[in-house]
Amino acid sequence: MISDNVNKLADKVKVLIIGKHGQLARSLVDTAPHNIELLSLARSGINLLDLSNIEKAVARFKPNTVINASGYTDVESAESDATSAFSVNETAVENIATVTSKNNIRLIHISSDFVFDGTSKVPYSTNDKPNPLSIYGASKLAGERALTRLQPNNSSVIRTSWLYSPYGNNFVKTMLNLMSTKEHLNVVSDQIGCPTNANKLALFIWQLTTLDTIYPFYHWSDLGSTSWYEFAIEIQNIGVNLGLLTRKIPINSIKSFEYPSNVKRPKYSVLDTSNSQSILAAKDWREELAEFLKKLKER
Ligand SMILES: NC(=O)C1=CN([C@@H]2O[C@H](COP(=O)(O)OP(=O)(O)OC[C@H]3O[C@@H](n4cnc5c(N)ncnc54)[C@H](OP(=O)(O)O)[C@@H]3O)[C@@H](O)[C@H]2O)C=CC1
Ligand SMILES: Cc1cn([C@H]2C[C@H](O)[C@@H](COP(=O)(O)OP(=O)(O)O[C@H]3O[C@@H](C)C(=O)[C@@H](O)[C@H]3O)O2)c(=O)[nH]c1=O
Image (cartoon, rainbow, N blue to C red):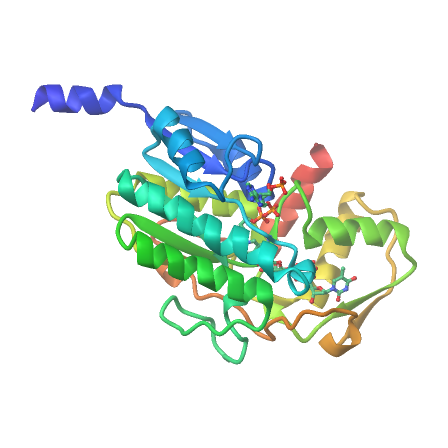
């Protein structure tokens, strides 16, 4: 018995992150606990469409947990390139789940509020039925289903929404950029959801890696709800207060149909995160945004 425990202590927890250059993968690296041995792989290090290549990467590193932070996230381009969206968001997930299931490795995978159709009037629970409106949403749902089919045990799908971080493309960075270069902005006010600080999602994911058993589905976002329009207003208000922006520009509230886009986005996609709160307590989205922008100013 004693030697078993010693062996457990000697075996460092090893976590493989897939999607190295993405905003969530980078936030995971930023927040990783010190006792974890990490390997984060980009496309150059792992070919997600080649099962034997994933096998090799896993055999070499021998992770206890794989976090799939990769994804085809260009919601607009997905509408005209469904093949690429499904290959990353479904086929790659199938391949990863096949390998992790075979090797008894925990798999944590990220999905989106865009699997829902937005007709609900109350936050979506993990039991609610998905019905995606977009190709991106359909490809994310296909990935969820592949994972559930191939690795029903020791895996979790975490659905999240409106992710932002200092890295890559996200609404907060786009707004700060547009607010400093444009004379006015039009932003949709009839899509309601909840922003998520990628750092906090990363902390939630790290908590999941420590639990003995995990549920198949979690929802995670910051607390509260807002529209993209109110989100933009708040970014501008805090941005000006902190000196990230030098002036305020007019921000007009518009309807979805007035915004040039090929994508049908859910009108309401707030996630019910209550089951996740015992694992990590979330904060209101405004508080998270203010902390994030403060740190961005200090960088
Ligand atoms: N962004 C958001 O608002 C939300 C995101 N999600 C989900 O969270 C996850 C992480 O999102 P986020 O960090 O924003 O995504 P990013 O777009 O920032 O990063 C995605 C990463 O996936 C990598 N990738 C794409 N295709 C492949 C491939 N074939 N092989 C290897 N790597 C690949 C990209 O690599 P490269 O840099 O080389 O292109 C990129 O590094 C995704 O699954 C996404 O669907 C869920 C809800 C909201
Ligand atoms: C830039 C801009 C966007 N918008 C609108 C368009 C859209 O309805 C909303 C957000 O636009 P974006 O293109 O930034 O975000 P979008 O790529 O649609 O965001 C989604 O990404 C995927 C990956 C997810 O999983 C979702 O949770 C969600 O975060 O804001 C404006 O109204 N005005 C603007 O100037």
